[in-house]
Image 1 (tube, rainbow, N blue to C red):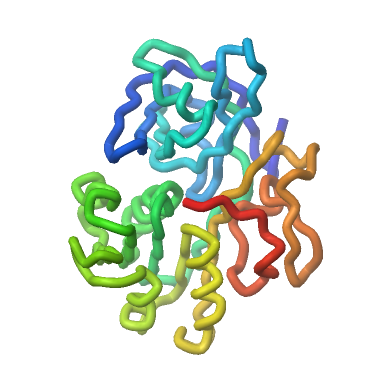
Image 2 (image 1 turned 135 degrees about the horizontal axis):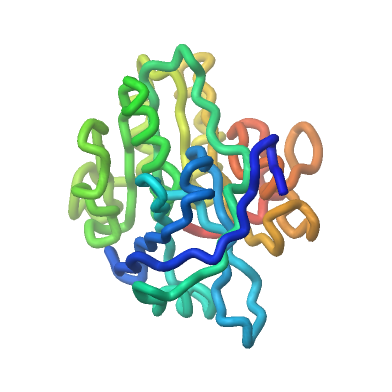
Length: 268
């Protein structure tokens, strides 16, 4: 199977570790050489989250980071499938289909990237930050959460990323929403990338005038998917170019292309 001209692998991957790094939030490492070697920032995999008895749908998870043949996923245990996944331990195996989707598009001339993460939004952005830094680009990472205990651990971020946290209760970093930080950090940026809840995307779209002229924002949509390969059509959204499927046309879209109110975006 191929997607976007690249091979898609259907693997039975051993679990290397599965750690709770924040309350109900886990970092899952798998040995998945075929997927790890070809995954790009912003792409995702469909992970089987049951033992076959209940036939639950696979869960879409964006690639969080890659090290050699190892690949990591950052996820929240919120439903039956992801709670089952959170109980997997080293030596267990998981069915994984990937890499899927289009991924982020970094322009060759973009030397400074602005990354905006709300809630679980660091899931795809860490891999993007690592890749950009390896290519010699500067990265400013804005991350927001309700309180300090919900912020992604700073010691797991790339060392060379300029990290600016914000919390709604003021317990760490700036006080307020992560979108409040964007106007102050957008000057001189070549491209911006975002992942977070729909409310964050709506704010970014509404405050387009506060962005430097010509600054485009690519976002990663997190939606419910049935198949991940464009067959079930459950992840259809409306864009200014017509209906699009998040699994095959995305999950990365231009912020200003999405018709907000039509996107079945999950809270992050």
